[in-house]
Image (tube, rainbow, N blue to C red; front, side, top):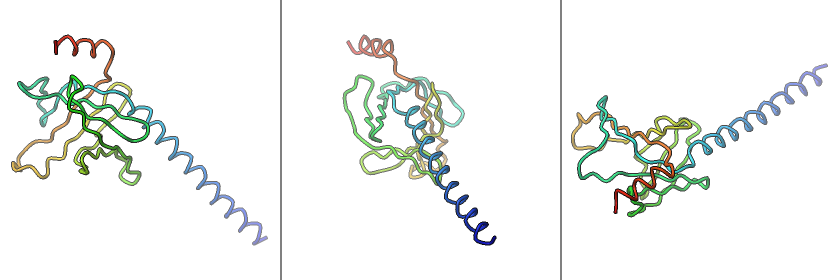
Length: 151
């Protein structure tokens, strides 16, 4: 009887680990499916203040790839910088690493919107409010408009 109970407990432990592993994998696959697109900046949040454009500021857009690489570029696709994205299972956040530094995380992500949170902890102004960049999926129409604007 004890052997039967022990075998049942061991069986449950192995099956729960297998199911938990499947959940992690499918969760990461769904994150990858949501994230891996071309994203263009929509607006910025400086604390609670919404900023739609800054004069003479270069807009930064992103392309996320399923191989966990990313490309950061200006609106006209010049000035490309390569990086990597990773999912931290323990903290349940997506981190962006560019030029060996991880100072941006994904604050939120859904089918239509990506919100990046910039780490301002090393800023000289300690009273700097939280900075979030809100992105939308880059469409063919928005790419054509960017082409017209740069001509």
